[in-house]
Length: 248
Ligand code: HEC
Image 1 (cartoon, rainbow, N blue to C red):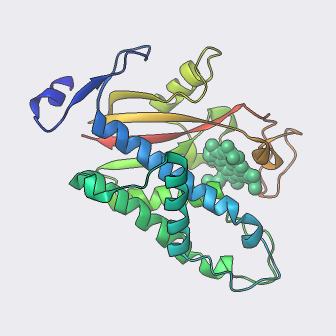
Image 2 (spheres, rainbow, N blue to C red):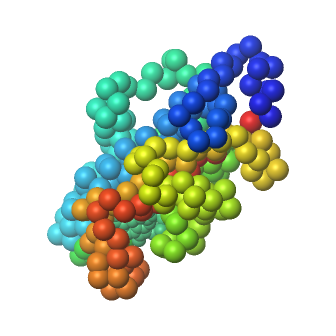
């Protein structure tokens, strides 16, 4: 598989010496993986920023369109990264993936306008985790033969079974991210076969912050507002990971 990195003059290979196992990945793949994860996170944050509005039973029309969420997500991405996404500088594949993800976000929010605008219903279940899962599923419908995005979690705390880690994800979560000496926040990536196809896979750890604990915190087992039992998590605990696959 590694040969393919060098067989194309288009691709430049870089080595990440800091990883436990030396891994070769193209700079394009790394950048694409990081971009997909960061845009997904930005989108989730936008939903989170508007959670009080979304949950407000006294307001009907909330003016939270797909277009608005996309624009705010890209603004937030730019604020966090210190630069906007310059689509002119993306290659054809990168642009296709970027546009598919943005389109997925826009569609998911637009398709939930009736729910978001429902008067007389407070908590509607339209939360960042659900939004992200729906966006990831839509992204797969559009470009699943090229790439996948997913949010997963250690098996003992997975809520939605669709988020269940596959063998590779489970192994990285357990042997790396849950290891006491794993550098906080450090992603892991590797060239590995998925569904019989060579792929670049990347896992980015996520941790609970105080705002997550109303649902994922203490007391363990108590049912949260979404109907799931709380995990008993604490601030800083590993919550899960964003999983990116780029097929080669
Ligand atoms: C309002 C309650 C609530 C809050 C607050 C919340 N979550 Fe969740 N979380 C959920 C629900 C419900 C799901 C399952 C969503 C689905 O159906 O896919 C979920 C799913 C997840 C998943 C995906 C894996 C799985 O178990 O399905 C991760 C990772 C996660 N949450 C992390 C976080 C983090 C980190 C925060 C804080 C930044 C947070 N959550 C805040 C309710 C919440």
